[in-house]
Amino acid sequence: MTDVVDSDELLRRMQRARASARQEERSWRKRSEQLRSTDPEAARDAAVRTLAYESVITVLDEILTPGKHSDQG
Image (cartoon, rainbow, N blue to C red; front, side, top):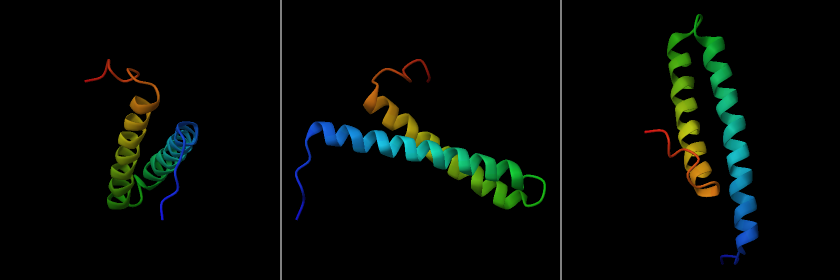
C-alpha cells in the first residue's frame, strides 16, 4: 500500500535526493580522475556515471528551483 505524502515531505525527499546525487557525482568524478592514468576503461565508466548524476542533479534543480539551468542549452 502506498503512503500519502504531503508537499512539504515530497520537497524534503527531493532535496535529499539532490544532495545524495551531488555526493555520488563528486565521488564518481574523483574516482574517474584517480583511475585515468592506471585504468582508462574504468575511468571512462566512472566518467559516464558522473554524467548520469549530473543529469539527475540538473533535473532535480529544475524541479526545485525552476529556471536555474535555463541559460544552458
